[in-house]
View 1: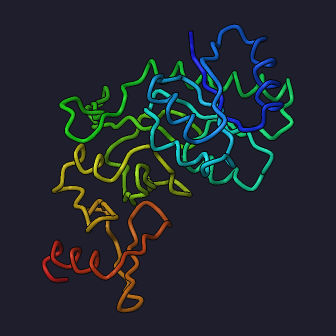
View 2: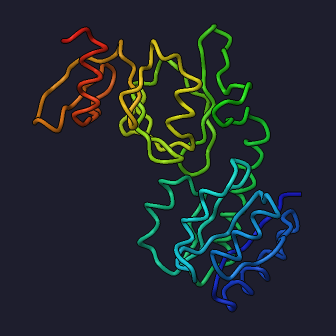
Length: 255
């Protein structure tokens, strides 16, 4: 049975959510935390499938807790503040509920969370750097593929050769794919990408970017501190700093 933790400093709100979740017998509520510190303690003792998370909490932002989660845990934000929605989905939230929580809206969120959990159980999990098991597989056509967790908690299998560039965002990264309109935020650090992608095809430019060198189509110098990279297959550009531009020049033989 999927398990859940609730993190909310407002007692009336957490009691209402607990009462509403009682109608969803497929979910077991393991506990309630009122602060970042309490939540961190509970997360050390449990690895829940679902985290219902408020943003503004005693001891800091609930966003701090995301670094303590494994890929098993899917997040649904519960807050009275709509302005955090974009950030929530950028870091992989499955849903975003505004207080006071509506019974029907919660049912929709629960459905999304349960689907995300089922997908997690079916797809290969990602692994930290140094793990001997890789999320890289091969499909029926013999193409190399990579399993990722996309924004919103969805899982996907991507063709490795569609990856044009990756930009590090701490424990997350922005991924630009050929043909995609906008880069996607995925739950994997740049260091983990460097472990699973061949460095000869996907060199790392300093601390922040990995690029598909063969798909680089144009290098535009903007200033001493900024160079813009363009890639075949996408209209998206990648700005890089001075150190990354120097590394790229070395990789291209001084071009």
